[in-house]
Length: 128
Image (cartoon, rainbow, N blue to C red; front, side):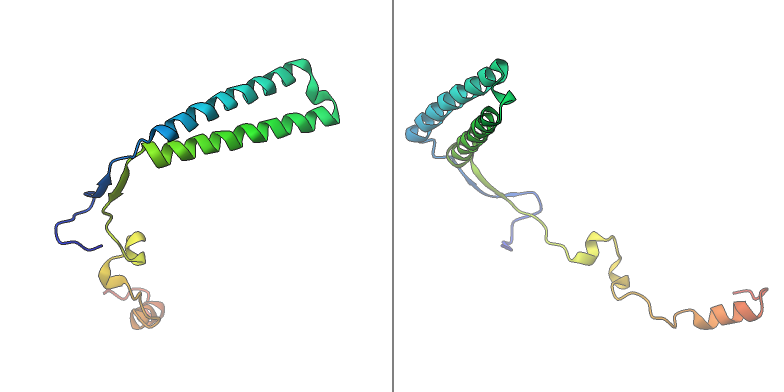
């Protein structure tokens, strides 16, 4: 994806949404079904269906259907009515994420500064 004119944050691809009438009709019908099930769940809570084991399982099933229906509505909306946008991102190596300078990528060896540390341990007033 390394095109010559692309910089960080540029829009690389932008496709208009399809906006099909069949998807709009499906979203409307799924929304009506959603409203019916939300009403049934609310009525069940008010009526006390959750006080019995069977009623509690029924309300749990209705709540599951509500979320599954909502997921289909959101899936259709995202697929048919939101544009497809690809934004150029800068790829970085892992050490850049840790704020390490390029010269420090390999780290330090065990013997770096060993002679200085030994001199300082033997003679505490040693000056650099």
